Image 1 (cartoon, rainbow, N blue to C red):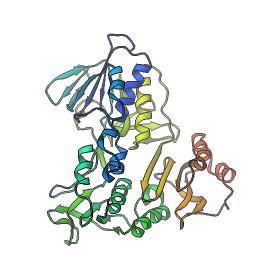
Image 2: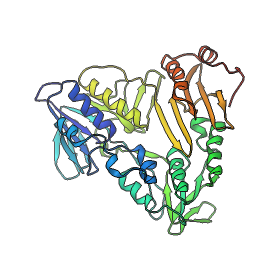
Image 3: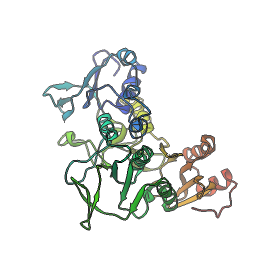
Length: 399
């Protein structure tokens, strides 16, 4: 599909979509590339929204992923501010919200996710630049913020808000934040950091709705707030694919090549693909995966047909903690601390699923210390072989 007559449409103008467009050009595609985005701006970076933008350390002009000249060099047919409304596979067209249709020979779906919401009056969410700027205006001394959800996004926002002098309450339905992902003991360490910095973190709390005065809990009581941030996860943006013939189940279902159908590939937060390295289907909502998968989808659309089998990576900044993780931590069977101390919040934890090493997470450690673990995960090392070989820690030391 490298001829001048071929038309490729990318639906989703964020990190995955941009990476796909750049890869198509680098790979020699000279035909039309139409980049469709529901926001009226060129692709920009999202991780800084909950950190640098919310804190005021950055101004919005630092967010664009590429300079205008670099985007111009891609010679894109950019359709910003026009969401995809429907997909017609038989006709090879995408209908847009403005009523127009765009024809394609190849399609990459990279529509990302949208925040889950709570019933009641409007609350803040944190997905777009406008979301971040609106929430930023509500923070500062004398202000009260309630954050619903103590996942990584809610935790980052809480850390920034309390650093700006805001009175912060975080409500989390689980007994231990992030235990399903990082394990209970690691989750307790991350939770204690909030307590130590003055955040009122309440776990095992059910929220019924957002009300004008704040948040109503399931027991009927109300926690007063000047602003409420709902950070309870996200939903893949797949509504526009209803009736298209693509399989949708917690994302667009893809094979190991990121293919969802003939001539249709997916990338980023919306894609649920089979990762052959781990032997399971996964959907990853992390910035690094979005870019890597965008590149893989583009190459495979052009005929490379190489399985997309990455070791997922994510990071989070909270207070003075730099958190880094590689692998697939969810559904793990065991966590072991192999370096450092949980109590000092400076440690490396490794994760076992079945008989394999499947993940590593470090807090406050040098990036070099995590690389051997990343390599072992990529090599599909067994737990028995990897842990004693890489670590000098006693085999019985566990989180």
